Amino acid sequence: MTVSAFLAALASEGPPAERVKDMALYGWLIGSWETDTLHHRDDGTVEKWPGEIHFAWVLEGRAIQDLWIRPRRPEPSTMYGTTLRVFDPEIDGWHIIWSDPLNQDYSRQIGRAEGKDIVQIGEDSRGMKTRWRFTEITADSFHWIGEERASDGDPWRMSWEHFAHRTAP
Image 1 (cartoon, rainbow, N blue to C red):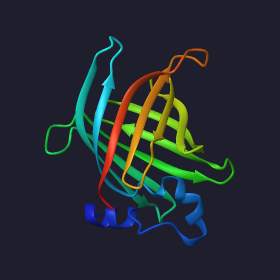
Image 2: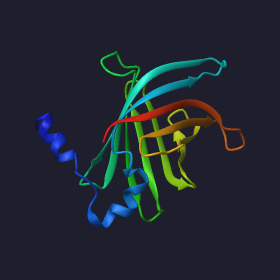
Image 3: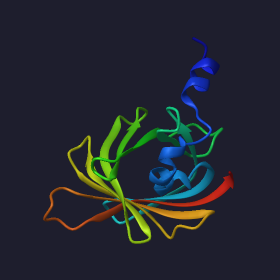
């Protein structure tokens, strides 16, 4: 199978009619985005990079997949990962599976709406508790906040932020 045949089988134009409402929580993200990324290090310093994100319908429109790339291409990547988001009516939530093979970074979360935000809670491959939030959501921008903690009793610590602006539908 060629790459183009694989991509044609993976990609979808949108969700099936019976799933449109369920897919709305993340469906607005479909398209391409540029991001300014901040890494809040343990020592209090902050690193900054430009990045890009691309969201698409996949698996006959039953899932949304994205690519998060830092820095923007054509610069050499320091992060190149993908998320698969699948709605599960049994839990009225989304299964979120993140994978960045460049850094061997993996997370599994459950995502749901929380007020005007989208909140994903889970655990990463280091055993850290994770909370990833889409906030300040508009049609053309969002603020993504990545937080972590070692155990449920610890306070959340912000580790990453992405300030994203749409570049293409």
